Image 1: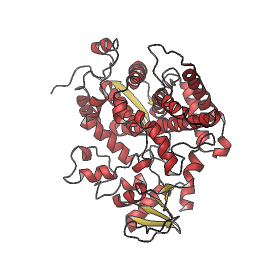
Image 2: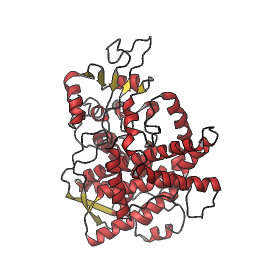
Image 3: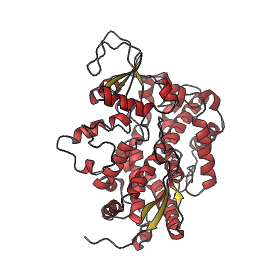
Image 4: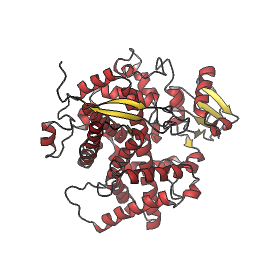
Length: 461
């Protein structure tokens, strides 16, 4: 299996082994892969610690963050500091996120797409949507004052994405305090200065919600400031990385699937036009709404749309941004560990599950290699709960992705904004197949689309 990892064939190889041998397969002398709901419960809610691989790959500034932390206790302590500002209820009612959403979607993104549609200029949406994800994440972390504008500033976006590509293939010791980390640290220092000096913000600026939350929680920590400074920076950089890359992948594959289905685009738009207010960019009511705070439809109303939800959910199932194995270590204890009927699994054994394999269990997801949003709209009787339990785009248990609610809220808003106003068609999708990696963008790193403005009239019912 180590050879398969090095040659970029690990994920599909594991899937083929599960198809051949069942829900538990042995990948090596001390390594298992598990592909069942019972296995998920045992491993990911049963107290199995992360392996050292996470620290080797995801540590920033030589300092742990939520992803790189191996042990449960320190992870749990830090996660509690941030869980409130990433909760679904907080996000849906956050005036700061509402303001950020209005700035990015209504003031930046939709006008750009309108210009592209008017000029008939095709665009590679992957870097654009990665940049949009970064704009949302940075503004929620640091406030709109220090958030990026990668929608407009193409040169800075390209430089940042290039920095990141070099960063992620470097060993943590090599990249420590390099250009990418220094960029983040400088940004954190600016926000810390504002918080420490209690500098007033103008009415248009939003709060640095996530940074301020962790900053306040660490204030009572008796460690020296330099240590707390690096804890803050490591955590923020981890959120920035996750926020731009995984959301960019999900946006790209959602648009790719919809661009092949004009009729489904029309059905989705009909659903979206039922929102109040709508997300129409150039309608008279849009101009009136922009004079008032809260011009966008509420997150609650977007979350209630069944077709939109099924489209996003099915994209996350079939094109999971993080399809690779999530390794854990069987604890060394006096209690016998049993997984999938196999007993007395020794402590120290590495056990993992992967979203790629879980999302292709045919008994749960019939025709698993097909993109079928309707499976979520009309699930077979008795299969709905199984589909939800096996859905693993964000993981499960105490290590489940902290930002899953933010990701879903932003993705739904952006997809809704696009298909309220435009149709999309494919110009170039060569290399659209996903890489066989832990994080899996398209192999060709592109999806070139044409945006076309749609009629402002409501479709006849």
